[in-house]
Length: 143
Image (cartoon, rainbow, N blue to C red; front, side, top):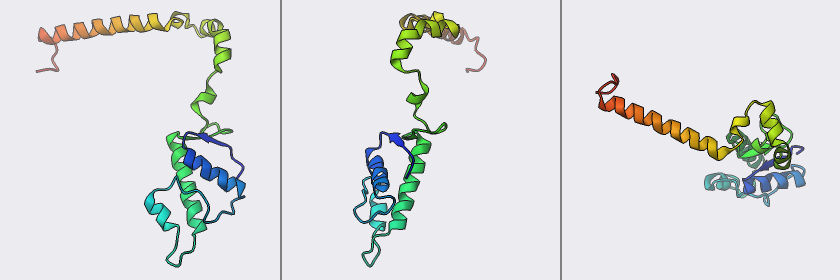
């Protein structure tokens, strides 16, 4: 009830918000969009009674699954925080980019396009060397 979730799974986030709004006292009106068809059908007993405990179990299992998959994040968690929360905010990065790169000893990587170009050239050269070795029969691992 007290955790702050973020993520892209709107149906699960809606269910969590409903759970919070109702203080955990949910009923048949609880959102079921995050459940598969079998899970949804299992929520109603043969007598027509809504199985609250089963709904909560499904909800918590889906939350755990989405947390592990990185599709759901906890705002105040070290382990399950969104990847974006670990990054330097864009405006701060833009204002201090040169200083950050200098301190990290990475000024050679400031121009991404030139780095990619150099890497492509190196990769192309390595492929050329490998292919020439194959054609000359110098690679003992190929028949």
